[in-house]
Length: 281
Image 1 (cartoon, rainbow, N blue to C red):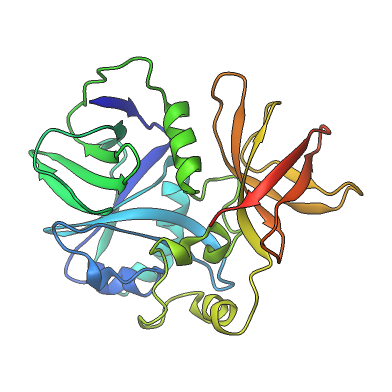
Image 2 (cartoon, helix red, strand yellow):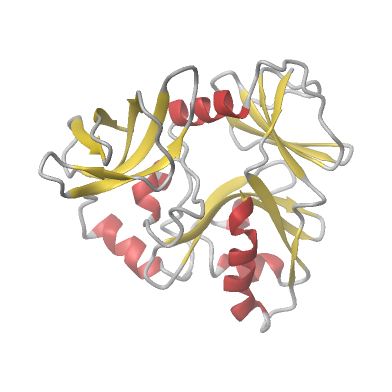
């Protein structure tokens, strides 16, 4: 088993009688579809439909556990805290209780045939996140042994980019509608569930609009970071980087770019490098 500690992620729990009912009003996914052996993914949006944070979520006996970017745990807690006071639920930062590990290759235990399948192993939670590899996240209360020191966070990031996964971080919080991260194609938005914050904007884009800013994949030769601007040849902003890995001398990238069509597009880093990007299917 190849495991690496994904220190960029933290955890937020929502527990109590009204935990699911409460978060249902703020999550793009349908939490009623969760079970003890099925996880989900989605986003929490502001009134303008822009993602405050995105998450994977697992149902526990006393509520929900969300894996989100560690640097957004406090922001998300404060954002939801304005509303949770009216519910029989409470939130807790669980980032010192759980650690997130990424695993490529089979995990010992029962087989998890589908993406989002969950297995509870002692005090750890195993979630299948990709058929490729396959890949798993382990949300661990006990340390997971890394049996291959050559397997790094950057290799995991590259696999995420290959699979088209982007997660909201501090550099792009409150910037993008979920469809711009392709969440409508990977089960992150339920268009038939009840109302939630930002739903009107998200639904209007799905049914009446045209997605002009889309998730694209590319690769740079020079250093690039999440939140970096990408420009046209005339210096006009085309979008931003939302996920990046550094593997050998390459920088695989996911970016949200203004591109209404389905063709590849070139965009430039502010330092000048021209990169060819292709829309993520």
